[in-house]
Amino acid sequence: MSYKENEVVAKYTKGAFFSDCGEYNVQDLLEMFDETEITVDKLGNTNGVTVNDCIENDLVTKSLVVTSECDDMFVYLNNDNIEVACSASLDYEFANESI
Image (cartoon, rainbow, N blue to C red; front, top):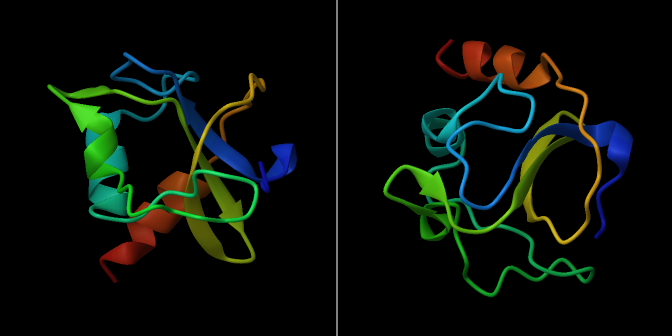
């Protein structure tokens, strides 16, 4: 994928409600990225797949990674098995979104 490990804020494993670090849940993901297209390959293609397409019955149907890159946030399809140390940047971004 085109993201770097140090940019990862949270990782969601297929079938989960909470992120792997337990800090964020599917509702956080939907509130931050409602109808946002996710990057599905190394070339940056989205193929029209949105975050909402990856959530069913409050569970993620595909493994996803949330990143913070250059003061912006992105969601990637996760085909890698990287370990994620939780970041406060998602909380910061969410808190300042309503300002």
